[in-house]
Image (cartoon, rainbow, N blue to C red; front, side, top):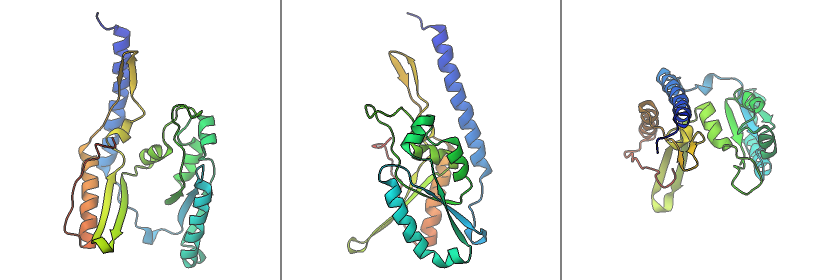
Length: 223
């Protein structure tokens, strides 16, 4: 049986929108914004996002630690803390947004954010199907590198992981399409610019810290 032309056109239109969005993203990456030189920024605004669940509690305690460590910088006006409300599951669900628009505006006014855990709805938990706030934030702010140091001196481990955060399924993971009741398609995106910048960041860190080995590992078990 031939496919319904209307069904094909809807799928083509959906795919076309994704292609346009990703080509625009590639052009933005080509422009290559320079990293912020925080020595020249004053004040450095640290946005505090409590999130939900245990998020507000642990974020509040972490903020207290940071305020203690940065007491002198805060006194001199170099650092400023700004609490941003509204990144709760209740508010996100009410607005059907991974990050409500007004919250995103406030986040973009900050140089750094301290973010607590945020619940991502799962089937059967009673919340509407909205995208992960983490994934949405990475995409909106182009937070492409998740940098995680791991040090266990007793075992000779001194590693720093540079995990890519915005390519593959992360780029368009919420934009799959049910073509028909029998066919669903999701998308994964790989770009030259996205691949190069995470590799360059890892090598630059290795050079800066005196490390002599860089390994590339796929995360096929995750995405």
